[in-house]
Amino acid sequence: MITPKRAILLANLGSPDSTSPADVRRYLREFLGDERVLDMAPPLRWLLLEGIILRTRPKRSARAYATIWTEDGSPLVRTSRSVREKLAAVLGAEATVYLAMRYGQPSIASVVAQMAADGVGEVLVFPQYPHYAMSSWETVVARIYRELARQAPGMQVSCVQPFFADSDYIEALHAVSAPALAQPHDHVLFSYHGLPARHMREADSSGIHCTRFSDCCTRASPAHATCYRAQIFATTAAFVRRAGLASGGYSVSFQSRLVGEPWLEPFTDRELQRLPAAGVKRLLVLCPAFVTDCLETLEEIAIAGRKTFLDAGGTSFHQIPCLNDQAPAIDFLAARATRWLAERSSAAR
Picture 1 (cartoon, helix red, strand yellow):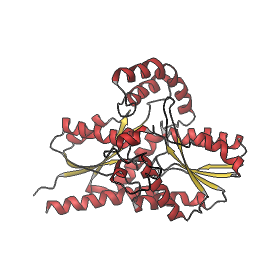
Picture 2: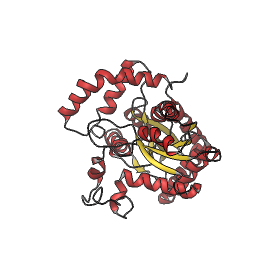
Picture 3: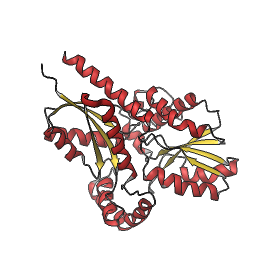
Picture 4: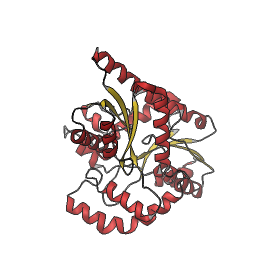
């Protein structure tokens, strides 16, 4: 029996091609035009996007991107390419590693076309999102499956599920955080990407659990399989146990909200203003919703968030880097990929 060519497809968010307002506008149009990101009736989404957001936000976002841009371009894309290269070096001839972005380049459509041209027969889709959310994990998986069905219907597909409480992931997260945790600090703030509160209810297939009880995130339920809020609390609890953080020495907040409806609270920017008055002078900020440092961590937290905290009376602020392309991250990815390769080889015998 001929062994089919196997591949690992890493999928991340994406980035504008440059910091020019035109490129940022094009990126935002694709990103915010996604029905799973701005989930509203198409006419309303078009009106909000074209009539309001794209008239003002591209210039503002372009200035923000300019503060983190590198000689090699987008930090997210640059780091993601490094991850792909390092993982490919570990896996060797066992599997080809590809990288695609949900928005921007390299696009999912172009990478699927390349895999088909390369003769890939089996692929492991590895979304670079630890937690389920309609606007992150689901949209990238749905787009990949749609392109595979269109361009390579015979390719066998497996997909890594959200790994928010996977022990290997928590170990990797702790390993990259350990140097910062070893330094003197008063508090650790877990800042997660925010979502509209109604997304929790929309993702609850039972319709009777999420946000129906005050303890819905800690009360066991099948709904947690698609509940972002429950999953981020699970990540936090697992990390706290692994790191041995003291009760009261950490808290959770949410960043990157839009106006117009209730979003998950408390908000990170307001917490950064509040904490110094509560006695927190030396702060560590960890952003476990992201595996790769990007605009939301490098600008919103490390630059703007730092200023907010220090202006409010804090004396020391440190954003702990994401997993990025550090050795623990590559080890985690390689372990998952190797496990899949072993399963496929066993099934083929």
